[in-house]
Amino acid sequence: MSDEQLIREITAGNDAAFKTLMERYQLQVFRTVMGFLHTKEDAEDVTQEVFIRIYQSLNTFQGGSEFSTWLYRITINMSLNFLRSNRKKRMLQSLEALFTLRSEEKNPLEELESAERDRRIRKAIDSLPERQRMAFILSRYQELPQKKIAAVMNRSEGAVEQLLQRAKENLQKKLSPTIGK
Amino acid sequence: MHTEHPIDELIRREKETEPNPYLAARVMAEIEGAKKMRSSAPLWQTLTLAASIAAVAFLGISIGNSYVENGAAAVALNINDRQIENLGYYNFGDHE
Figure 1 (cartoon, chains in turn orange, green):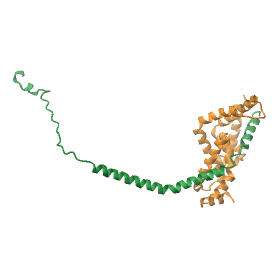
Figure 2 (cartoon, one colour):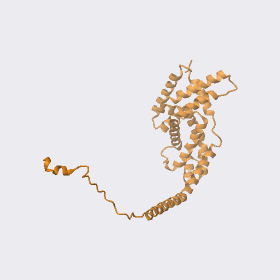
Figure 3 (cartoon, chains in turn red, green):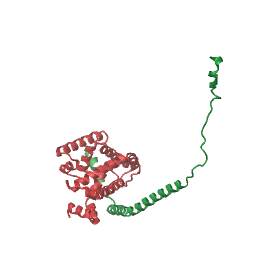
Figure 4 (cartoon, chains in turn orange, blue):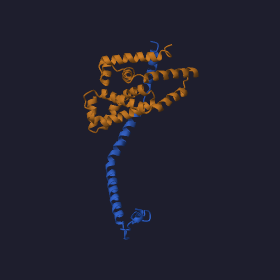
């Protein structure tokens, strides 16, 4: 069944159709949110909120763009809103993660180094300008083609290409003094 | 680029993270819960609103009825300030 058919079913009151739609897209939404938040628990919470919002506003979806484009836009907006309202909590979480990581393959020093490297990379991604971060996450976490990213971000393909190039340069600049050695 | 590999590695690990298999069920339960709340709200809200309006009207009438007019005559404030300011002083011819 196509997305359009499912949406018609849902707006007619068929909740089972919504479950089908959710199962179709839940992994994509979850991965995109992971790109912004980096923690499973927060990503699950935001994914849940995204689908509840979708369900509540499905009757306002005009069909002017693809359903997935609309879904990605809502996902990005809700992830950014979550980040803005939970900045302090997230800072504490990232420090906590640094001290609670356990791995059987690495010794404690290697574990700490690896956790610190991850933290730096996440911080570098999170500190990218908003549009660069959006393009980067959609491209790397979702592996969306530039055409699709352009549709989600309401930009031209050329602009998306530029954003991705700048994001790459910025990450290199931020990380090469510590990680690129 | 030396930094590419660690970034790819981190993204690969984050992409491998699977959401809770009951996430869809959790969302459906939330939606069902919200629906039930919405469908039961109107009757509950209507009754509460009607009861509040009746209580306010009853309270207003009771307070109005309990008011008893004070029968005592009004006491007019009459201050004779002649003692304070002896105006007669200016009328004495000796002082002119």
